[in-house]
Image 1 (tube, rainbow over the protein chains, first blue to last red):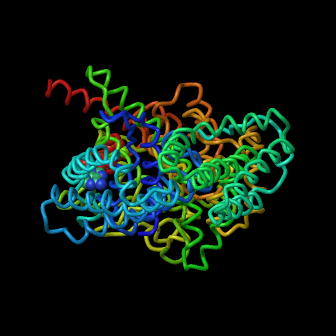
Image 2 (cartoon, helix red, strand yellow):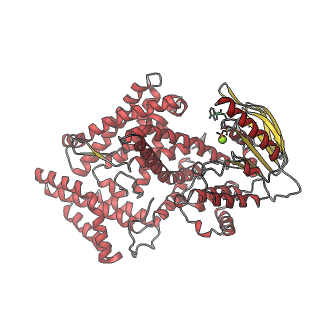
Image 3 (cartoon, helix red, strand yellow):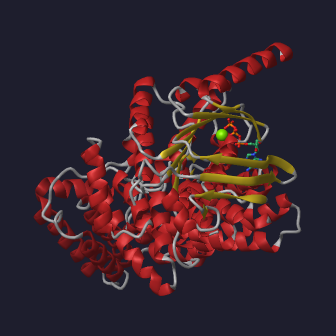
Amino acid sequence: MIEKTSVLVALFAALIAVLGLVPAFPLASGVPITAQSLGIMLCGTILGSRKGGLAALLFVLLTLVGLPLLAGGRGGIGLLAGASAGFIVGFPIAAYITGWLMEKTKSVDILISVALSSIMGGIVILYIPGLIGMMINAGMSLNAAIVAVSVYLPGDILKVILATIVTSAIFKARPNSVLTRT
Amino acid sequence: MFTNVSSYSTKLDGVSVQKKIVLSCFTAAILFFIKNPLVMFFIFLVLLLIYFLAGGLKFLRLGLYHLKITIPFVIILAVWHLYLGNLDKGVTLIFRLISAFLIANLFLLTSKIHDIILAIQKYSFYLKIFRINPHAVSITLGLFIRSIPILNQRAKDLMLAQSARSTKRSFWRISVPLALSILDDADHVSEALRARGGIKGREN
Amino acid sequence: MEISPDKPTEIEICSASVFYGKERILENLSLSIKEQRVGFIGRNGSGKTTLLRILAGLQELNNGKVLIDGTEVAKKRNEAIKKVGIIFQNPDHQIIFPTVGEELRFGLSQLGLSKNEADLKVIACLKQYDKVDWFERSISTLSQGQKHLVCLLSVLLMKPRVLLLDEPFTGIDIPTQLKLEHYLSSLKQTIIHVSHVPETFENYQRLIWMDEGIIQADGTPKTVIEKYRTTMKNYDEKTI
Ligand SMILES: Nc1ncnc2c1ncn2[C@@H]1O[C@H](COP(=O)(O)OP(=O)(O)OP(=O)(O)O)[C@@H](O)[C@H]1O
Ligand SMILES: [Mg+2]
């Protein structure tokens, strides 16, 4: 039903935005992490490839046009010259791939399926554009860029765990709402 | 929720938002093709001049103030390229970053968020070329903007409810109820949407 | 389309049944309504909201049908939105757009009006309620009661013949409630109103008490409320 699709896309895009307002907490390494990419993972694990990707795309497009939705109240086309440009551009791809993997692993236990999909989509796939962005915008070599983005890794692993907890809890409470499992 | 950052009136306030969007995206894109540090620095100076001409010294100062979020990355770039001994590249990248933010902020500081949203809504109509239902897009867009303050308030309420019954306060404890409440909302809102006729046209 | 008081709207529920999974929520319910003010009362979970949803054509029936002035509301959606409007309990579940103007315009453009035509009507309507400055106003700056008014206006603008209200006054202070009730009482539409507050129905022509998806009592508000009260009291004494 198109109404439901529209509403879910809008609400999950808003969820990504709101997760950016949650105060970032600095990890032991001193790098602040935000919950925003948790939202990206949830888009994929709950809504699936198409709807999840659309929600992330809506969020990214409006952020780049200028709404201050990125963590820290950032927004605007200037972000494309910044350190996280690749990650921002990669958000919709990451959500799409996460959802796609969820759809492909329907028969697997949900905990494993979510953990696997969000590691692949939310970390492996997302870090590819993330690294490219770093190389272009910081003029780093691939190796240097890998070292640079690795500071985000502990936080992102934490988010995979959270995404797994949230998605499986929702699956228990409202099985029909986890669209990747219906 | 989205209040405008600038209360200064500038000469660019009257220019249509559509024009400003296109122009700022176009000039920001050009920055990525410039490899010469001197040219890049020159563009930076021109941008400062534009700020000054548009709104005077105060507005220029405001523009510079809003560059503060670029500081961490500027420091990284400076240190990294000093270490490599590649100053040309470092200067180019730093001023590209700064100029891109100056361009973006010039647009944001001289436009009302509400007008920006209206402009996006207008542009999104052309998505029908890609067989995307414009009616669905405009509804999704409106609902997205409308939901942000609601969900933000919901998150705060949940945090409060949590700290009323527990000494620990952490975000992850509210993430499940927050996500569940969103799925509930989705049921209700899509029904309310159907009650008033739903989305017209093709599936998007 | 004007609402003429001499020709009352006819609502016909013909042996409607609704199941959620195996659980039956409404069973073989038949009801015919010609009155202009009808109330529904009943315990939590008795099926009142479900009944309103089938009247609005939003809930699929497992059996039976619902006709409003001869239109089958679940099937002919384009006609149904001209016949019936529904207001839910929580305005945040109903308001789709960020500003009052856009929200009010939406229903009218759904009926096929152009943006300019719709805006003219919206502004005229806001003027009528002395709220012209609301047009550009962001919904998130409105109070709860003001949001309820926006919901009401957005549905009224579509001029439905039947207005369905699902506990629209919960969480609203008494002055605001009185104001909204005043708006409602001035309407010519048929109003079907679900509420837990018996006083709401004082001036209504008919009140129906539902329990477990079945009609328990149907009559004038006075007699039905009395029955409802005594039964609920007995319940209380038995269970405690
Ligand atoms: N989506 C749903 N899935 C399963 N069961 C449902 C669903 N919605 C409602 N029900 C069940 O249907 C029954 C009737 O619900 P309904 O919402 O119509 O009651 P109500 O009379 O409006 O109650 P209240 O006074 O609390 O609003 C309840 O037992 C409820 O548990
Ligand atoms: Mg109810």
